Amino acid sequence: MATDSMTQARFTPKDLPYAYSALAPQVSEETLRFHHDKHYVGYVNKLNELILDTPYAQQPLEDIILAADGAVFNNAAQAWNHEFFFEELSPEPQALPTGALKESIDAGFGSFAKMKEQMNKAAVALFGSGWVWLAADREGKLVVVSEPNAGNPMREGMKPLMCIDVWEHAYYIDYRNRRADAVDALWNRIDWKTIGDRFEKK
Ligand code: MN
Image (cartoon, rainbow, N blue to C red; front, side, top):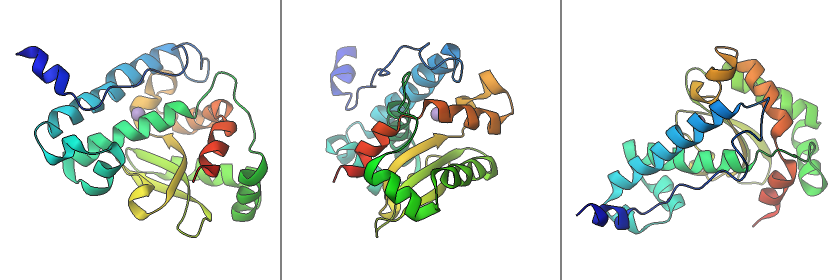
């Protein structure tokens, strides 16, 4: 019965925590509708299909990301990465880090401006599709990590703090091939309150 596969769907796509039009003009309503409703929801639905009647169907999303390879890893990580990405953006962002996060950024990079410059460079340099991450390494030091495709630094034992989606679907409607402009605009929507909360969470 059709209802069986519905009730067995393991993961439910999360709604955006703001209106589709809330991040304009940096990210247009059209981009967010495609990005969330087609790409992100597509990864969640595909993951549910792939893990149906497998041991993964009982596991938390993070455990699947750490254990799986191939298509299961790709769709699980893309689901997680997009939820993390959408959550760190805000219509009314706190523009700069404060407190312990600010101190760690200054210690790791010299300044917020230098960290931003390093992430921008990594975003432009990443060949093809992928994600640029701000993460805390095993020693707690903040680092910039470039990951191709669905890559997530939690696979290397790091704690993800912030990510920039550099897949073309994230910016092509608004910026065409101008990835640097898309990334530059995105900084106006990054909520450092959210990133700070992630940093302080054990
Ligand atoms: Mn994306």
